[in-house]
Image 1 (cartoon, rainbow, N blue to C red):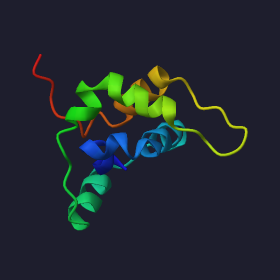
Image 2: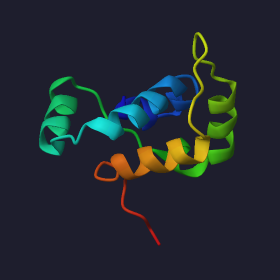
Image 3: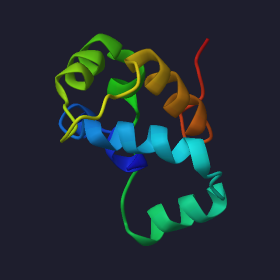
Image 4: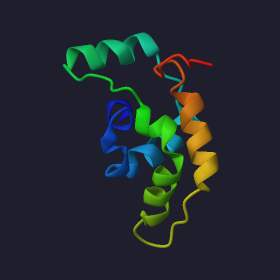
Length: 96
């Protein structure tokens, strides 16, 4: 999931953002294992450019996503901020 939201696929795989939101509520990752798993799977983390710099487009994709059944999703801003904090160890360093 982290590798997906680090790429431009984040808009097509918005459910991964929602999944990370819910995972963040119950699981604290061992980041060493996460990095090792990414390396072992030969996946590459992207720049997170779209996730970090295109929140309006991300919000649009998020708002279009519908759960099956009578399930409401959390507000975009809450989801976005929760996921951003949850994955902060894999995000590129800010240039600020």
